[in-house]
Image 1 (cartoon, helix red, strand yellow):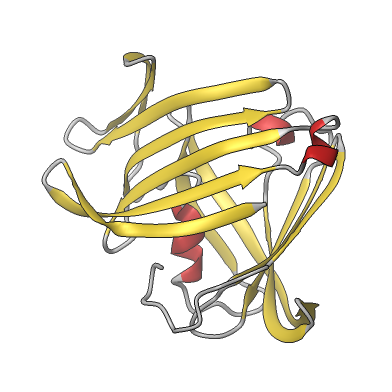
Image 2 (image 1 turned 90 degrees about the vertical axis):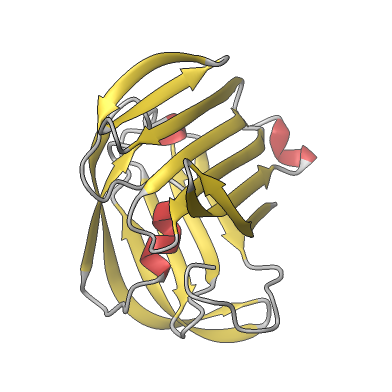
Length: 211
């Protein structure tokens, strides 16, 4: 079960910031194969132009990763911290986002089939250009309802975690082709098999850009 949440605006280094939260938990039947349990938090400026902070505390398989990344734009570096200590610092490129906030950035764009979205992405250990292709617009059925949707395929070949262990990882995301751009379905193909996540519930009322 996966959830995405937009928390109330907070202040980071004196600037207002969106606070995004991703939570994931595998059902007990899947725990014997590849257990997942934890959360990721991302903080960006209100224009979704740069990240301020990334927090991760997640069990993936039999490895638990708990760390924090502070994006210090005054110094132009991202500090990767574990147990409160800085373990690594990497240079930032203007417009760098974190792994969670980049989803909200993509959702804020006027998407069209065939376009490629590119944005600097940092994990605190490295900063690189992340790319995603809007493959096509199609209609999919989720929760017994037909949804016009964009199919998006991010390039995850250089991603970490479970993707790093896979020879030919693939990741597919469908979001609704309307002003809300709701995440509808995710399919990932990795070394342990294929994971499929489909929308179970969403807010009834329209949300603001970046939500």
